[in-house]
Structure formats: structure tokens, C-alpha cells
Image 1 (cartoon, rainbow, N blue to C red):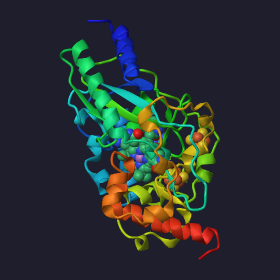
Image 2: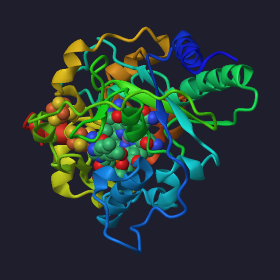
Image 3: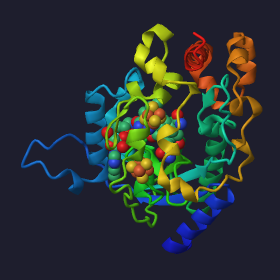
Image 4: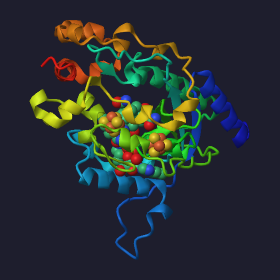
Length: 342
Ligand code: B12
Ligand code: SF4
Ligand code: SF4
């Protein structure tokens, strides 16, 4: 078998050949039976705790404040979500990957256009990234026959941004998303949990310093303090995850949604680290004409079948027909208010 650093070099080169732009390796600490505060002795300072303990504290604090809104699936087993050894017994390392989805297209600013977040301009990233992670997994099994692995993209019980920071890919910015010095705000994340001890990268350092641009840019004050997001106030949550009618959304939040009909990029767009962002080479992430120019009157006229045809293979399908129509209805109201036609 190749030496540890040669092996890591080969794995990273293979990941890049599969189209992953960023790749890093995080060390996963040994399992601990209980991540809760110790019943004995003084409570250690949070920074000195192993990463799963810190994640557990952050996650449970976030859940206690009800910042997850109606995403009740986030409440399920916080210990497991914080500790990869509870997801893959014997997990020692995590290979974290990022894909650049930035394109240099510009969103339609005309009056009857809605706005869709960049990550949903092209095809859905989940299937693309998971199929490539499976190829990387197969490569790992060839190199290390005894290895056990598990891959996830977004939907697994893994706190992806924190592990990406631990793997050196970027740092969690004040808006709570991962920022990369190479790719700015525009990386989607995935990971392979492994039972092998791979040579780990240095964790990334937080470069936000005194900047607060993303906090100021948020139209709904959803970033309640640096590194703390109240998802219930976040337009991304409201337009994608929130089920229910327009009347279930506070009138003030409805106004602040503006023309956003799926997701929101305001806190990402403003980040100064985007100056280095280069367009992706991935055809999958190229926008379609309707995601770049979502015409509100046309979208409002779609029936459910037409919606399903239009959103085939697109992340926008997640809002479901009723949610999407609700968003379009709110955006139309806002655009007529804006033009003084109401
Ligand atoms: C739930 C969820 C949401 C929710 C809640 C978002 C949130 N910030 O928690 C909603 C629906 C609002 C959402 C929105 C978006 N999402 Co989302 N979402 C997730 C999901 C499934 C879980 C996130 C989670 O665990 N939240 C719980 C809280 C407790 O954890 P946290 O966000 O990590 O927050 C903590 C940290 O910031 C921590 N912290 C701060 N500093 C440090 C430092 C260290 C060292 C540590 C350990 C922790 C830490 O303190 C916070 C707790 O208070 C992840 C996928 C995954 N499995 O991880 C994708 C994910 C985070 N989403 C993603 C994307 C792209 C988005 C959007 C940009 C989409 C859009 N354009 O509309 C927006 C961004 C909104 C925003 N400002 O965060 C990407 C982010 C990629 C990146 N570069 O960061 C992910 C990773 C999916 C993926 N596989 O690529 N999302
Ligand atoms: S995605 Fe939009 S609403 Fe959510 S925190 Fe960022 S700027 Fe605020
Ligand atoms: S806008 Fe400023 S504070 Fe926000 S993530 Fe970027 S550098 Fe950090």
C-alpha cells in the first residue's frame, strides 16, 4: 500500500479528476459515549473540547432557541448529527469535497422577474455529487480493501460546514455559510466518512475579522448575531422549506421577500471574498432560461403538471407546487407594490 501522504495525494488527485474543486481531510476524534456536559468536574472551555462536543453544544443551543422553525427533522438525534462515529462506527477521517457552482450570468432585474438563488439555477447538485462520491468511494476501496465508508450530500446527519472548516476548505462566515479564499461563497459540500486514519489537513482560519457586511445585507435580520441564523426569518427557509399558505408568513416578512421565489443569496453576494470567484466548468450548474429569467406572470399560470415538467431535475422542485405558487403570488404582490400599481 502507498505511504500515508502518497495515498492522500492520490485520493485528492482522484477527487479533482472527478470534478470536485475543493477537497480536504478532517480527522474525526475517537468516539465518546455522551456529548452532554460532564456530570463531574468543572465544565471545560468550549474551544478546548473535541469538535463533536462543540458541534453538539452549538446544535442543541440552536434547537433550544427554536431557530430551526418547522424543520423538525433537525431535532432528530443531535448526538448522532454532531458525532460521525455514531453515523459510521469506527469513523476516523472524513474526506470533504466542495463543488464550485458560480456562473458569470446575471439575474434578470426586470420588473416582472422573480429571483432564484444561484445554487438552483442549474440541475440538482445532490445526484451529481453523490454519484461522483460513489466513484471516489470505489477508488478508496481499491486502495484500502479493509476500509468502510459512507457518503452524504446535504441530507445526511452530518454538519457539513463545520467539517469542511475542519478539513481546511474554508471557514464558517458570520452568515453561517462556508467561505473559501478560492471560491468565495459558491461551494456546495459533500463528504465521505471513512474508518481509515488518513493524514488530515489543517483546519481553516476564520478571516471575517471586523467585517459585518452579510449581517447588514440580510433583508429580514435573520442573522441575529454573528454565526447565528434564525432560520424562521431566513428567506431561504421561507421560500424552500416552509409549508403553508401566504397567510402563515408574517406580512412584514412577506414584503421583505421582495421578488425572491426560491432561496436567497443576499448575504452571500455581498461577501468581499467573492472577488476571486471564477465561473465553474461544470455544465450541470449552467442556468436554464427560466431559472435565470423567471417571469412571474407565466409562473403564476402554471398548473401542477406543468410545474413538475418545468422543475424536473431542478432543486426548485423542493418547494413543491403549492409552496412555489405561494412564493410567486407574494413576489407578484411585491412587484406591483414596488411599481405603485396596487
Ligand atoms: C438546515 C439547512 C439550511 C437551513 C438553516 C441554515 C443554517 N445556517 O443552519 C436553511 C433552510 C435556512 C438553509 C439555507 C441555506 N442553505 Co442550507 N443547509 C442546511 C443543512 C441541511 C443543515 C445545516 C445545519 O446543520 N444547521 C444547524 C446549525 C446549528 O448549524 P450551522 O449552520 O452549522 O450553524 C452553526 C455554525 O455557524 C456554528 N459555528 C459558527 N462558527 C463556527 C466555527 C466552528 C469551528 C464550528 C464548529 C461551528 C461554528 O454556530 C452555528 C450555530 O449557532 C446543510 C447541509 C448539512 N447537512 O450540513 C445545508 C447547507 C448548509 N445549505 C447550503 C446552502 C447553499 C444554503 C443557502 C445558501 C441556499 C440559498 N441560496 O438559499 C442558504 C443560506 C442561508 C444562510 N445564511 O445560512 C449549503 C452551504 C454550502 C456552504 N458553502 O456553506 C449546505 C452545506 C448544503 C450543501 N451540501 O452544500 N439551509
Ligand atoms: S439567505 Fe437571505 S434571508 Fe437568509 S440570512 Fe442570508 S440574506 Fe438573510
Ligand atoms: S460578508 Fe464579511 S462577515 Fe460575512 S462572511 Fe463575508 S467576510 Fe465574513
